[in-house]
Image (cartoon, rainbow, N blue to C red; front, top):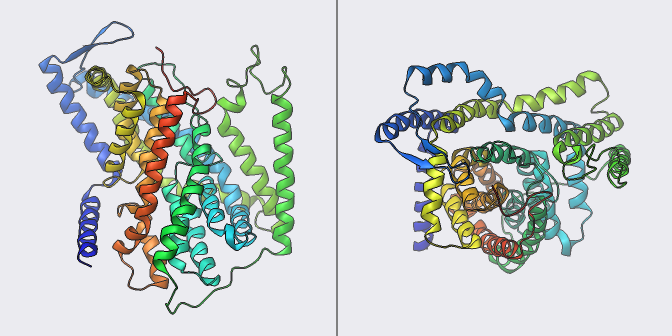
Length: 505
């Protein structure tokens, strides 16, 4: 009991420290000001480095000058509107809005849970949790309480269902069989950082797909093992006073809507295959007939929008949620409304990254950092494992995946590129560290909501209760994910279509 109290006190202290941090947007503003101050100091000290690719001597640019202020003012709008992730994320969210607001995604998740036999319920919930990443926050808001309710109705401890689903939705956040908005958001930030070294480098949303799809299988298997060996036995039989609620089966209209949406989805897949499989397919790159540089790969966000829009609208017209123009446009407007916090964050992040790049501090730091690391002769696997651990520690202070990546990508992506490792590998490593700590970090934005769900069945549940339930998943996911990453690097497998492990200037 004493150790439990100590852990709880530590976690509450961590929560207080995390809550004391400024809003991420304010953090970017602070870092921008600090960058400008550092540019003056480092320029005065004559800090420089020789670019290993171009051979030029780079010096720190002092931004605390009249020309520096003029550039900041003149480029303020361009920095924001030209920010690479902005357009891709907004377009992808518009596509997902049709599937979410029509009820299509909710119906798919419900049928996935309800149709699964008892012995497959844990892996099914984990799979549903991973897939829910394509629908923004629906996994937290809908799937986690639904899983707790399902366990309760099956005579099992509801907190076990909550823990399993939370592990899939949040602990396995980086893993997915499908693309999600996180892929488009993070790849855009990675591309911006990579262009500090290579101005033409492109990081697509598919850049980690192979690795993350394989990770999904590992997360489901490991999560199932932890649930059956640790979580469910630990909680034992539920002795609370909760009242079971019935999970509604799909209505005839909803089933009919799924059939029509499925038909549209298969039709779109058939069109994709028709355009890609033949050597002269109309969706291959014109002139070279390559697939990796085709619009399907380079313009994947457009296809996310098309698939989401057509399947969502089809389902909505059948069930009655999207029969009018106002309902369709309203869904898009609601999606944009939910992106308001992101837009505010991006405005300040874009200014910080632009100032950071203009100062040359990032590339000079990357050059000296890479030279320092070269002295240790570390292999790629060891280097990336260390980076993952660093991100895990950072996740206790800043929970937002995009905010953390926007802060550290301009340093680590160029640094590892100079060591010969691709931005796609750095991004994949980052996503591991960002994911596994989510479920034990009190500063994670949805952590209070999870506690509310837990209190419904156990009024005495506190932060330490959730931490105790989720820590085995964090430890197991981290260990096996690192092994998978180490194996992937050792075997030299690509991380996604056109996404190698190495970077060659």
